[in-house]
Length: 319
Image (cartoon, rainbow, N blue to C red; front, side, top):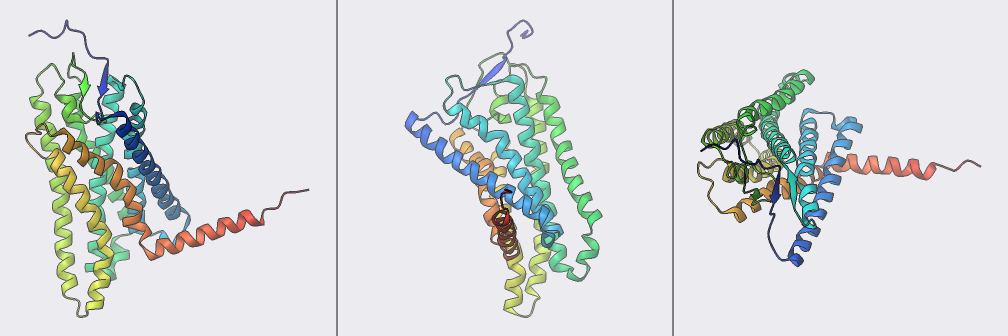
């Protein structure tokens, strides 16, 4: 069938949660609150790591990058979702939809590389503590971060190249609150089998590959911790990993469910819930899970806050 003479779609309709107006207002309020908490919490972590020399270490450098990615991901998805709550059309342009999809998956892919790098950092800190500062020097940290961003870009390249030229000629309604690639592909008028295969392979290699690296790191970490002769020593060593394990569990659990399935099925409400976990809930919780439970970060926050409050109090208007 010749699709060249058919009218191409110039915009998509994001159907969102499709609930009663009162429920939509409640969802809007909850998501706005979580978005603001996420922005404030993650931005605060980034600023603390930048201004406090006590946090100038590899672990906090990676945490700051993770916080930056959280801010970027939520800002890619949530503002448009909030705007569509009170929009009559709930429309997004074709280019806007494609751009949102690419940036969402690019930033999300980078997060998985960063999480794998952080597990490697914990492995060196616990299994080779005497060589930690030598191995995790500034050059190594920069190379790991740059490699994470490049790796994410390369993992996204093939699916994006195969998705961009697809022809969309209607219908144009996406059963999601953002331009997720899977429901978007279902609207294409041309064969999407190659794009779906590339999407599945890319997701599987990224998620399972980074999960394998994380699993190997924690296998050695557990073995090393079990060899510590005292219970107090074991608890102290394990406590440095609890936050990372919590974040890894949430991220990988929901993402593998969403993207590493040959058949995506039609359980869109479940998919939306899992996406909310990745795009809204986890970014909101990250500052609390990862950093604000850390005594060094809390001490830095207290000292920095006291310093700037003192500066404001000491400022006197000139007569």
